[in-house]
Length: 120
Ligand code: 5GP
Image 1 (tube, rainbow, N blue to C red):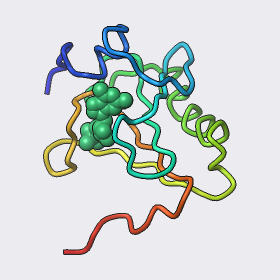
Image 2 (image 1 turned 135 degrees about the vertical axis):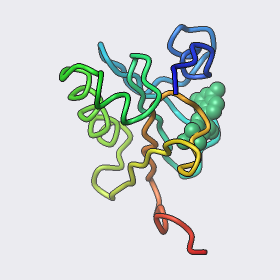
Image 3 (image 1 turned 90 degrees about the vertical axis):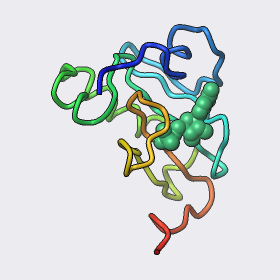
Image 4 (image 1 turned 30 degrees about the vertical axis):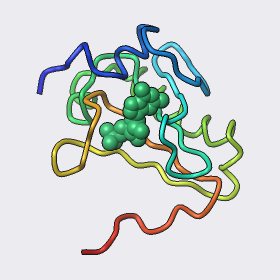
């Protein structure tokens, strides 16, 4: 899948749509999900134009990949969920239920998150 410059996260990165920023570095942005599913629900995205993990793993620099990983831990500390525990999840493609075609990690916590997926 090629990258769509008009996806909603690309617009957030360009400042065309506002977001509630949690943290940012040279390569990565973290912001609150507009429709939070738990008390803390933060999205972590690379600033580069990556659709999914395959794309990111194949073409992102080592610095970008390291920044993305470290930002998740940083967000957990900033939001106070590191101690109690949290979930990091990424929906990829059709079967994964990915709605926005820009790689993102959901960081969920602040209360029990529940089963990884519903049975059935
Ligand atoms: P996906 O289903 O692709 O894994 O998750 C996309 C996430 O993006 C959803 O949790 C949805 O609530 C969130 N989202 C969609 N549009 C916006 C927006 O304009 N701003 C923010 N902050 N989050 C959004």
